[in-house]
Image 1 (spheres, rainbow, N blue to C red):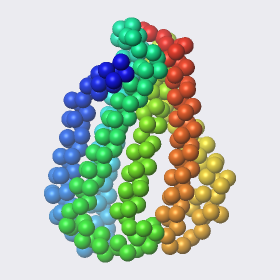
Image 2 (cartoon, one colour):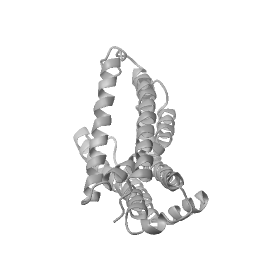
Image 3 (cartoon, one colour):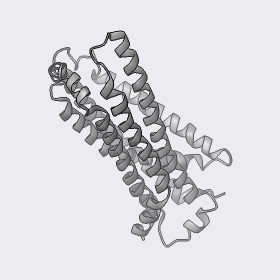
Image 4 (tube, rainbow, N blue to C red):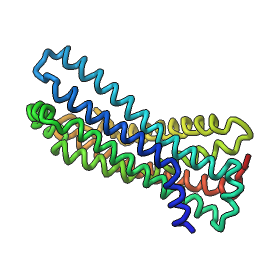
Length: 266
């Protein structure tokens, strides 16, 4: 039954998911060949910074919009299928609440991983042109010295970390939706507020731990020097991984409890 639920969930919103990322890839191709490949990296600093700043801002907005669209897709699917009138049918299926939840987690994580990989492909398309790679070659040694490793290897580690934390991102979305449906009205708004509150609490808690351990720039465990940027970031990765694991377990437990004891269909 779990496999059928996953297959059914993956079909939901597939067309919209494909359209969003097709537009992202198309924009990346156009941005590379019609802007980055024609950009004069030897131009005056003010002109270059202005042009690149505008270009980067546009693509940050585009990436943010697509990311927000994917989050909405996952959240709406979870909410509609389990906590609206559609839930009357869903909860009659021969599947336990845990199976329902894991079907959503697995299918959502699959979409999230594909989403991240397509972001990475879009970034690669943007920066892999001859014009950009030639310009980067002039500062590659300084970047490598600062990071303590080549940028390509660091980017790979970053990608692997983000992929590994994708299940935590999905469960966080679901936990906020589950909390939001506890309220009798304005459930979507309550879910958004829950997401903001939980995110803020996690960020504050993370900052406190970083400050206590001295794991931040100019902290006791981050002396200045070449190669320490990468060293600092890997310490941050390890600590973040532990925090993500703990918060994911708590969010999963809360969501599982709500789905077992506190479902409020409308």
